[in-house]
Length: 288
Image (cartoon, rainbow, N blue to C red; front, side):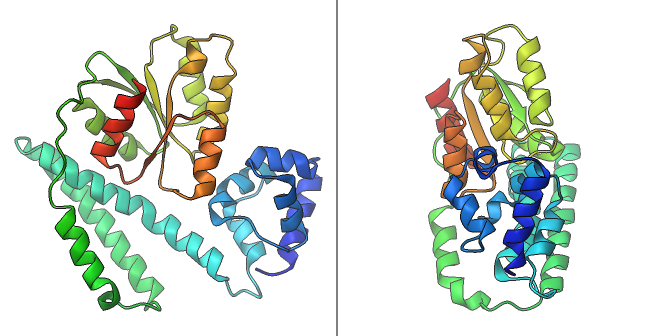
């Protein structure tokens, strides 16, 4: 990253009337980390870019532009662009593949999910063509890939996962993500309710009777209010029942920093996207 990135962060922070400590608290990092960023001694983890942009009142694109060196993106910012582009379609493909199997007797639903897979696959192919050749070659990982498919051919038994009578609130800004998670959860017998961001989630919790929701499945990165902020607000509610609703983070970001932020905010578990059904059921079993 260019040395001007630290100066850019410092200027945005002061323009927003924040101390280093205040910015650190909003990002769930240490004061020392912010100080190092502003002195160009280290740089924010790429997973922090969306939250950092939101707090400082700029777009992620503006942050990336400030981090570019003479118009040539560094490896970190290039990784952000690529991972942001491919994460969602991969989640859709895996989720819809599972749903196609579940709707064996419903041709209309199967066609719908197959179309989602086709569109997502086409998008990924176009992105790969745009990115061009990478430093690695497919053959380099062929043995690992073959071993992965061999060891992941059969799903584990889902006996014992019956959540009939439970009501789960799914919070995600993408409708298809909510639908995939909802289909998986409803198969366990639980009822699902949906909303699109953290603020809407809080409104639903506050306006519902205590005990109405048994658990919240919360995306971390959302517009208006993210999952971390929403969870912190829920934990601060005066109603002791509502404030203790189990919250499971649901995100494609799986870094140690993401996990720490989730648990520090009061979340009870961490479900990775694409969703592993058996792992999610086990989390639900532990928290319901």
